[in-house]
Image (cartoon, rainbow, N blue to C red; front, side, top):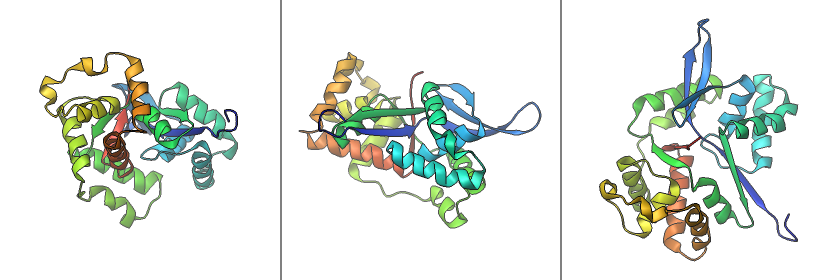
Length: 231
C-alpha cells in the first residue's frame, strides 16, 4: 500500500511457445522473446502457461498455479521463486498503480502486439498445448480455431499491428493521431519514455484511449494476439 491507497499489481506472460525435441530426442518447451529462444523447466512452463493469455494479480496467479501444480506434480511452495525467475528472464512482466486502468496501461505499454489469426501453425501449437499440457477438454481447446467477430476498435488495432511491429503505446498514439497507414509511420510520435508513461494518465480522461486499450486486452485474452518485448 501507498499511504491508505491500495496498489494494484498486474502480471502477464510474453513470448511465443513451441515444443521441440532436444539433442536426446526429448520434447523441450521453448519460448521465444525478441527472437531469443529460451528453454523452460517444468515449473517455469507451468507458471508461464498460467499467465499466458491472462492478466492477473499475484494472488490470482498463485491460486491458478497451485491448482495446476497438484495435477502436474510440481511443488506448490515454489511459486514465489519461479515467478521471480521468470521476471528476471523477462518471460513474465508486471506493473503496478493505484488504479486498475493505469496499471493495465503500464503493463502493456511497451509490449509489442503480434497478431495470431493469420498463423494457423501457431494455433495448432496452442491447441496441442491446451490438450496435452493444460489438460483442457477438446470442446474448450478447439475454440482456438474459431473465427472471431471483431469490434471496430479491435479491427483497427489488428490492422495497425499487421502493418508494422508496434507497441501498445504506439498503437494508442496511432489511433489518437488517426495514423492508420503505418507505411508512413513516424516514430517521433513517441520520442521518449516519458510519453509512454504520461499516456497512462491520459487514459483517465480520454475515452478513445480507454477503448483502444480494452480492445488490445480483449484480443489478448481471446487468444487473437500475443505480446513480445525487447530484451
